[in-house]
Amino acid sequence: MGGFEGHLYPGLSFFFYGLYHARLVFRALICNCPVQYLPRRPWSKGRWARLQQVYYVGLVKILSACILVAQELHSVPLQFVLISKIYNQRNFLYRKQWQHLTMYLTFFLSGCVDVVSQNLLPQRCAALEQGAQALGMFLLLPLMVSHMWDSEGVELQSHTLLTQAMFLLMLVVIAELWAPNRLQLWVMKAFFYMVIGSWLMQMGFMLYKPISGYKWMDDDKNDILFVTTFFCWHVAFNAILMVWIYGFSFWWHCCLR
Image 1: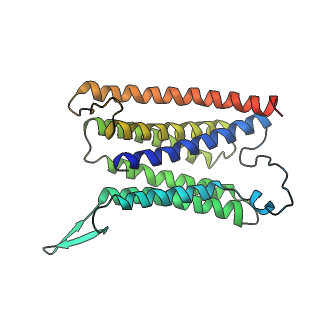
Image 2 (image 1 turned 60 degrees about the vertical axis):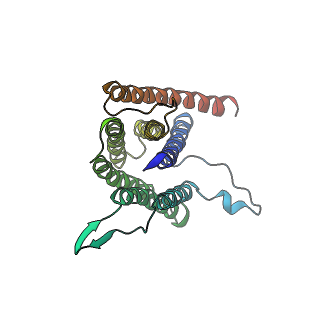
Image 3 (image 1 turned 60 degrees about the horizontal axis):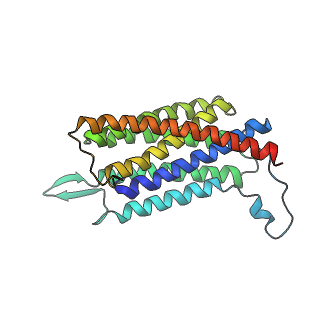
């Protein structure tokens, strides 16, 4: 995820996906029903009845992954290859770009599994969707660890905190395989998706477009320490946002209906 756009767009994807999960879990809590099989409005029998039956989350995942891949390929100035042979030596090229594309591939595959399970199979297989999601996070974590190999200072600290949140999210989605309708796990999953998304966007501004106009200095320990402080503020902000979402969901489903 290089450059400002390479942090902003994935961050938006993670954040809105977390908002989507927060809406699902709080609706399930209020309606007292399984979070994976929420009640849906009765389908109309008009011309667009079939479109009302389609689950669009997987399609949005696929579209987001394609946009991220296009943005990544656009940022490569020369021919995008994996290996070059110069003076009879083998050299791997664009290692970070290939890491990014592998990350986006996990989103794409997860979206494909969602589409197949929710729209094509005779009966939805939620375990398959969760397995694809857990596999994606399992692949994402080692990629993030290797992504920090030559980082330092502010960039290293911000990526370390991001990897910490991804590790916790991976534990949650793996635990969810054995407890698929445990609301506590769904709440934690939504929360960590939102933290990862908002922090990715913050990293884009810190590393490439500082809002204050002053560049963050890798040799200034105060800048490095304040990275952790800002991360804690993001955690608190997303926790408050989760409470607000629950309150709004309760008001919407219990007071307006």
